[in-house]
Amino acid sequence: MRRALSCVLLLAAIVYAPSAATEDKTYPAEMEREAVFFSDVLAEYQDLNTRLENVAAPLLQANADLCPRTSRDIGITAHTVSDYPVELQGVARSLLGVTHALSVRTVRDGSIAATAGIEPGDEIIQMGQRDLQSRASSQLYYTAISQMAFKDEQTEIDVRRDGNVMTFDVTPETICGYPVIVFYNENMNGHTDGKEILVTSELLRRVPDDVNLALIIAHELAHAIAGHVGQTPTRELELEADRMALSLMARAGFDIELAVEYWKNAPHPHTDASGMHPSTRERYNNFMRAKTRIEAKQKIGIPLTLLP
Image 1 (cartoon, rainbow, N blue to C red):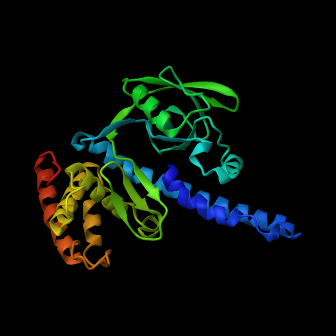
Image 2: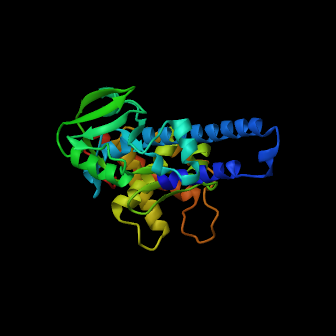
Image 3: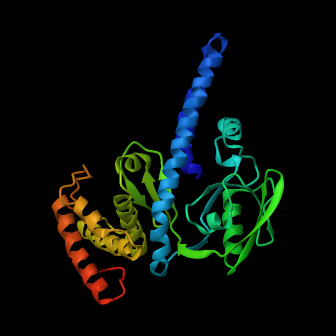
């Protein structure tokens, strides 16, 4: 989260940078407008993350058996004030109510946590009898403790809400262990380093429907699962990842016909001259062949594998 937020918050830092205007009588009004601007940016960041989490979740859940890396999940993300740049921690405290204690940042729609009743803003006190109240709490600590707690078939989570301690029983699930993260950038791009999947904010803005967003995520997930990271990029690997992506989507219940239809007349998304990326027509024909094989298997009840 820290890396993904840094671009947003550094942008806001420019707005909040001290200047000669501090002596001007209109400065309080300017500060108010700047605070509204930061609130809007932060709200968009939250919205983009929520959308990405909701679209990625079915892919990570349905394909866990194909993923070399897995994790245990209940559908929440957490944060502390330390996840924000020092110069903006005061703003984060004010706008988000975040402190050094770990608290719930988001709860995914329809998730185990949502069903249990966990809410954004809940301060996480314990997970599976493991204490999380230390002021030294961090994302790394939370990840380690949550994964230990979530190994159990059922675990208890204690949270503090409005001064009251509440206990929730949750049953974690195993998902693909490749976190899907928003990265603030003006370029349209999806990328994986084999450990996590990054989707730029501009790509999220420019892809209006969730089915094609799922295809982008699935394509990067396919690269990670197949071990393409570290290999010399080629057109063949890109086309293979497309075929895998369609199978991953079908397994997760997405409308692959709608995803493929987009590529019938889609503009080419890459502008590099390396020749690494297939043309739109190549990708469309490749998708059509994969779709035909997937639908044939589905018709006679053959389980879908990574490659259709």
